[in-house]
Length: 549
Image (cartoon, rainbow, N blue to C red; front, top):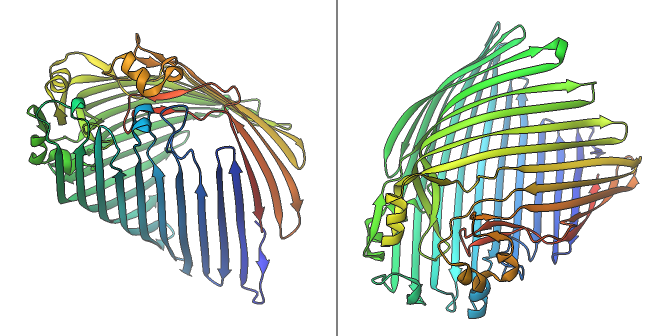
């Protein structure tokens, strides 16, 4: 961006404005204004949009899917001295959107909507202690809120939710360089004060087990307290690099747990072959999601069904192994290859509460995930640049369920008594993506790309006939009920941009893109949360006017 000088020699103003629209009855804008005054840099940003495709729809008709996101932020950066730097930010984000209906819900007149609000204030301070040491300190206060609203025609249940939290975070670290060693040690504390409020009214009792109460309400609050300490050392030994560390975590919400996690990574550079080889191991401690955890952990939910399974959700402990190569060819190409193996106990997942669209954390006994990724990059060859990537993953979860909430005899029996394993929700064997850009003229470029996925698994208890009523024939044609996987997805994209005006103080560019040009109905997820599905965008286009000054 080009600076615009004001009357004072130490002041400048520059910014960026983006206006966008597209085929989905969508329009939006983004603005960024930055002012430099002496040692202060002040940046203000604002963005907003309106679209009728806020979420991926659940049926091709795209019912009740309008949404409005917005973001406002003010940043301040100041150098008090060559050794002292302060950065602070205040930000407010919001999104209000409809929850997409399937066919039966739309016929009943259901209207569900949600909003997510977030206000953040954060600051970081860096002090250079000397030529070999740096102190970093940061803090944050965040208020977040999620609401769900349902009208009287919602089926089979009217659900309302009002969840909010106040989070206070603080971290401090010291970095020290001594010869070939780069040492770092730090402390973190993260406290979130959770509030959950939920209410439902059943409108179609035939969809629920006998004994399910016609109404249910819950209100709860509890602090989520987490602390951590770590130390690590990055050692450079000629062509070798060793990164080793140890981390301690403490978690206290429904349970009180702590763990030590060692981590080590080793890499070697071979200059004659322009090759880097690397390998790593990490032990991970992952607390369960706090989303609706108070609700699912409360004894009050035992009134929802005569058959209830409720156990605390344990933190997950995992072992991650990874190795790979990165090699350059002819000064133009680079290939990155990585293979990984991940195991975890008390593996986290999510389950819906009745038919409300509200989900809560559960845990499986263990999980085993392995796969490989490869990327071919062409950063620049004459006027052409691009990349090609491939990913292979096998991911399985093992029964029984070891934590969370299960309602109903069938659900409890299937989740706690079944043996063996089922695919994880992210178990997709083959994913390919590509994009190539070509600079036609100095002021104009075109690009094209494609994305392919071999299909994700689903865990669906309703017959294909019932699914046909809910989602329609087009969706069912893209589902394999024998393999319990969605059929492969494919989307082709194209892009173009042209510089309209360029002078010292102003640069204007017009951009256009088209998505899913092959117009395939791509079902991404099936039988998931909310209304149950996720369908990728149909063929579409977008237009943007970008001004930089």
